[in-house]
Length: 133
Image (tube, rainbow, N blue to C red; front, side, top):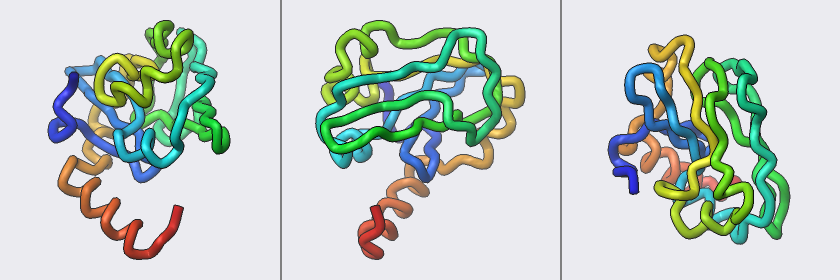
């Protein structure tokens, strides 16, 4: 399991674990609780080039389908075949076996624009206070 406090976050609830230019992407524990049971994942294609903020993956739950956005620009290097076969992994281990895809960041410095854990926690509190989901 990854340490949630060491990841970077988007306002759309994706997390990024960036080691050099190698990034792993998933959705936060908060997000998986909000969307409830994940039933289908449409992963990005390996080799696809994505720009920061581009929708590149879809996660469907019993509630609705949600776009997953690239936290940084780069090339998709791997998708989580286990999670595609067993989408419940996203709910069971949002910061572990439920990751969605990996990418090679073409501009790792873009990660500096993302929220750290404390910033994400503050964002969640503000979102809850405004009741916007």
